[in-house]
Length: 485
Image 1 (cartoon, one colour):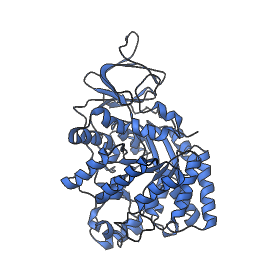
Image 2 (tube, helix red, strand yellow):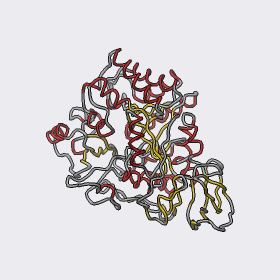
Image 3 (tube, rainbow, N blue to C red):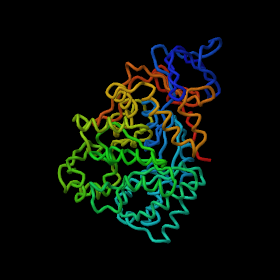
Image 4 (cartoon, rainbow, N blue to C red):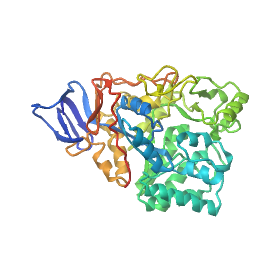
């Protein structure tokens, strides 16, 4: 296959020129002028040709979730913040059904902790979301419980988990010493931790440890690679202090990486501790700051919030931390995304089905009316690129690096196979996106989160077309597992 006459950009080498890319046996064979005799030719005139995007933080680990992300330029979609456990079972489920995109998982500290401390079963992301509000898993663990927790994490790491995902922000009562133990375990296995930070001291003065300081201090104490998830949604108006801490830590030799997404509203399960009525005010939130993803209901009263938390604890809810339409708030998003070495990551959410769904309707395309999700599932990367190129003024090469090269580098010490992703050079995996820069834009909204982005003309995963001439191949399942061993 020859991708002909596109503007080929490879941020690693600095290549930015109109030329051809030849693909064979799932890899890039050559980058440069090519003869087309006997080859399948993809016309890329007027388009940018670059390495497919690597999403380190996606909860949309289903076929329809992957399809939405494909139109956002993603070729590798990883569940690392929450993770899965048992991780071997998660890989088996995905392999049995097949996936359009490459996939992989960290070990879920939260799911394991829920089982060990609260007796809540480890049974996929839905079960983890449903258990977020259980008080029993949110406090200190006994010595015996910590030993059991460690043993289960070790099982997942032995099964190839891509590190340990730590939802510390959902279990604020956890002893900081436990977090240090988890980081040491990950460091010993040569893998990162992926952390949803504990509260900042500005938000909760009595927090056991400031969430940002905890991450950078643990990196220094343990030598672990600490990854700071969705820095804007957990830092909001304090993001400059947090980014300063990260900059200081990396300057002193610590390994702290950071990610962001370009939306002011987050999304999580409604039972999350920080959405309890007595906790909302700490973040300047009200019940009216919350919108149910499935129904679009804006929660009007404390009483209604209490009711929903009790009757449907795993339900997805939008949380309006920042207002995308307010310039001062939008500036926060720009500063986080354009911070040196910030990685674009979506925090893509699972699709929510309408109550009337039957059978395999979720596999229909376009996604049927009534299904919805947070718009970051469909639009994070296209929206980020437009913001970085059009508003910040970054070059296409620098902006694309945040979507492909930097996330691949974040993982490659733990997962050597990632050294062949996020690049467009001979020998690299043929995970390639071809997009029209003039047409590239996100279309998903908070009210209609399943509208795919526009502008992606072709998307190859391991050399196989998932999108060709703007049309999705419904049969395509070329995604392969990404494991640490």
